[in-house]
Length: 172
Image 1 (tube, helix red, strand yellow):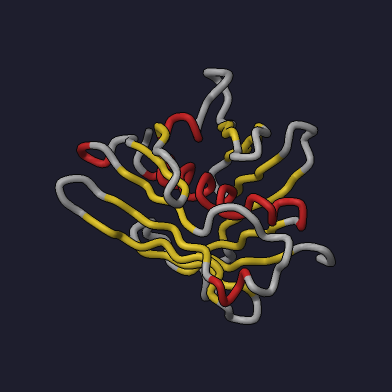
Image 2: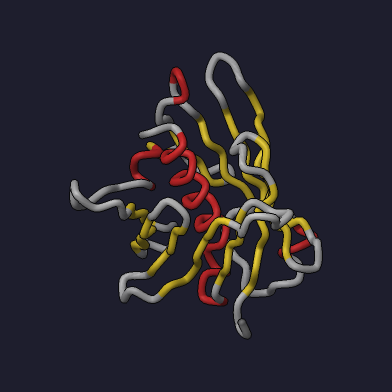
């Protein structure tokens, strides 16, 4: 797996989970900020992990602002303006499970989605990151494998991964 970074996801509940690298450094945490009247989640990129990777760029956090009854609401990166969650989960073909998002760098990326695996690919079809459920007996819930090319937008990758997992669990 030379040239890739592995993040282990601990916790299945999207209201409280974390990603750690293989050295046990906290890379990302997802926490509930507010439950009522509508849920707000904050995804934070942790400095104890990011300081080890000079290619990391972009926002250090994102916020998920849910609508009533946990419907799709808005998403914000850091202090940037909000955008509809649906913009980061666009479906181009009604029969496809793939979801598209436009990164802050202006490039479009796609998540190929199946029940146990998600792949983030660029416009050329190159896999930048893949998420897969852990094997039974593993102490973690899932594994996120990240290619170096994804580090410049890693917060957006983890945010849209999380958004797609939430969408699947809430049947959006």
